[in-house]
Image 1 (cartoon, rainbow, N blue to C red):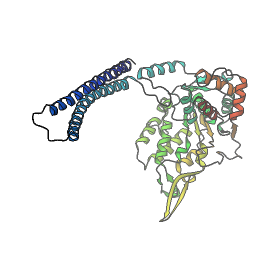
Image 2: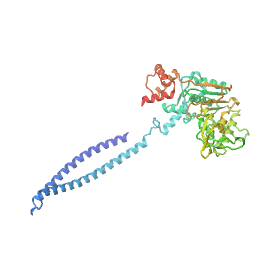
Image 3: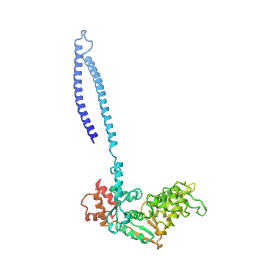
Image 4: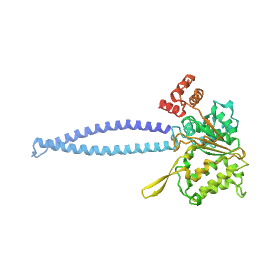
Length: 445
C-alpha cells in the first residue's frame, strides 16, 4: 500500500511539472516564432538590393520558414517528453512487480493465504476436529468440523461445494445421519435412496468419517462412476472370461481408495491368505504394475478384504448405480460398426457389485446418484431380504434454519435469520442446499 501511495504522489507531481513545462515551452515557442518572424521581416526590409520577390511571395517564404522551425521545435520537445514518459512507465512497472510479490491472488472467490497461515490453520484444524466416534442424538442440528486429512476435498462434490461456499470446514449433523448410524449397526447391507439434492452423498461421507473414527477399514468411493468411465480398457481373453474386459485405470482408482491415508496403518497389519505379505504391500505393488496385471491385482485385493476377520471392513460406494448401466467404452465390431460395452462385461465392476464383507461385522453401504451416471437401475434387487433401504429426506425447516444460521455466521447471508425466513427458503428451494447457495450467491452478486 505504501509503494502504491508513493507511486501515486510521484505521478501527480510529474503531471503538475509536465503542465508547467508545457506552458513554459509554449511561451518560449511563441517568443521565438515572433522573433524569427520579426527578424525575417527586418532582413527583407533592410536589404541593400531591392528584392526581386513580390510581397505575396515574401510572405509565403516567411510562412514556410516559420513552419519548418515549428516542426523542429515540436520534435525536440516531444523527444524530451517521451524520455520522461518512459521513465514514469518504468517506475510504474517496478511498482507493479513489487506489488505482485507482496500481494496474494484470490482463488475461488476467497483470498489466498500464505504458507505460514495455511500451516497455522492446519494446526488449529487438527485441534478442533470433531470426534466422530462420539456423535449421537445430542449432536443433531449442530455443525461438526471435518479435517482435510480425514476427508479430502476433491472427493465428494457436495462437500467440496459446501466448503468452497462457506470458506469453513463444517457439516451439519442431521437427524437422518443419526438414524443411519443405528441402521448400519443392525444391517450388513444398506442402500441409500433419496431425491436429487437431498444430501445422500454428505450423509454417506459422515458415515465414512464415523466408521473410520471407530477403527474400521473403510474403502470409500465417492464417484463409482469413474470405474466405468474415463478408463483405458482391453480384452481379458482367458477361458470362460474371454468376453470380459479389464479396466486398468479404473483398477488404479480403486487401489488408491484402498490405500487412502486413514487406511495405511490397518493395511500394514493385515496379512494376506498365504501370510507372506501385508495387504499394504500388495496394494502398492499393484499400483506399480502394468495394464496387463493391475486389474487382477485389484480383484485379488477385494477378495482379501471380503474374507478379512481381524479388521472390520466397510465398503462405501457413492454413485453405485453406475456399476449397473452402460459404460463409455466401445468394442469395434466392424469397419463401420462398434458396440457399447456394458458394465456386465467389466471384470472389476462385476466384482464390486457383490463384494459383501460379512466377516467380523463388515458392512456394504451403497448410495444411488440421480445425476452424472448412466443407469437408473436399483443397486440391489428388491427381493433381496438382506438389504435395508434407507431414504435420505430433503432438508426440513429446522435444518434449513440451522443451515442459514451457519451461513450467517460465516458472512454468506444477511443478519436476522429467523424461523419465518427459514420457512420461506424451504418453500423456495424445496429443501435443496445447492439451490439455497445459488440463491444467496445471486443476492450477493
